[in-house]
Length: 217
Ligand code: E4P
Image (cartoon, rainbow, N blue to C red; front, side, top):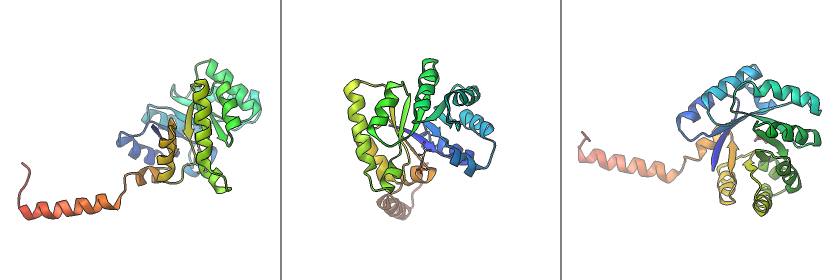
């Protein structure tokens, strides 16, 4: 399973990249707003730090303007994936860009039917938002299971990118279901390392080691 960081904060991204576990980054207009810096410059900087796909989202809603924005964004770096909304115009843009060799991340997916359309439009990634699904009383993970089944039935190459991840169990469940990628805030990725028994175990081993009076030389 690939791990993407869902953030536009370059410091967080640098720190996560140092772990060697980061495969890509996703941004969205809200994350760009939160980072408070120029959009194009931010994406350029992120794409230089992380060699994997870096999603940058168009904000226009009509096909022509989305294509214009995508042209600007895809020129930033070869590893920029253009993020388009799951709308008829978004999927037209998806088809045009992927036919041209550009990675496309189709975002704001909330149903298996939408995911099927994105795969048919040649999307590189489909982003089902599990956390937002859970928020309104649906089981976000059921959507991942449905999409996995459908994509496997037809051998679609579109990668399932589990988005709107809120906690470590979302990551574990997504991995159990065979999702290709998950994108999560830095906080959640950091939480994946944590277990109280690991901390206790380290403390116990250190205490006993110190009692031996030895050093490793
Ligand atoms: C995905 O690409 C989105 O940027 C993101 O996962 C949305 O998450 P949120 O629901 O926490 O805003």
